[in-house]
Length: 336
Image (cartoon, rainbow, N blue to C red; front, side, top):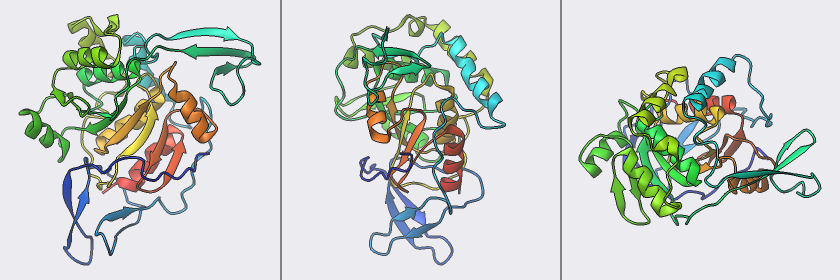
């Protein structure tokens, strides 16, 4: 279930970046990518240049085996990381945990088949539903970084609307997408949204939130995202437990395809992985699946299990659960 191979999930991004072939020569090869990712640790991943295409090929670390999913388990030594990541839920009143129009009802366990998603705790079964607006045909693109309170506001709205987003991380000091935002919009300001479905692009978190709500929701913005400066202040306080994480660029190798990440803003386990995705400047499509999302059923059907975060890497064929192990995998695979 956790070892599913992923092929041709994501379109090739348009940015061309030259990568120098290591060791033997200074041959330059073009890799079509829309982002660049690179952690800072010793590399245990092997890379090679394809003879026919010249593209860099990534493989999983030697001896890698996806871990078995363990529901609500915290890896030894990671408890304070999880608690720090969870602090934001208090300051943000749980915004980003529930999809728009969320409702829950207690039902008998016989009412929902075992192959259908439901919240099951002991002998209690809870049926969750939501009300979604129009779905975008193509993933909306957002340039942002984890340590930005204004970016967090937009990510919360994305979870509320249950949208799939192609994120281009822009940590401070990163070489690819920060400069590109300035080229596209004229300034390095975040978040920056591009909607390929309508041709609309814009800065300003409040404007992006309003646009997304009107285009892909019912036009309603949650109160917790409508309080002006107070919203921004509480979003800033939400980062206290993970101060400085997801802010600064860590050099990494550039993958040819964006990763696919099943997650939602309100999960502390997902946040820990997002920090590393951003620091490594790894572009990723995030499949939002907050409470009430129909994508919870999709993931259950795909893997036979629902748990987030869940990562699919089309560059290596790896698919895996467990946040701590995902973090290690990303660092080992993409570190410069």
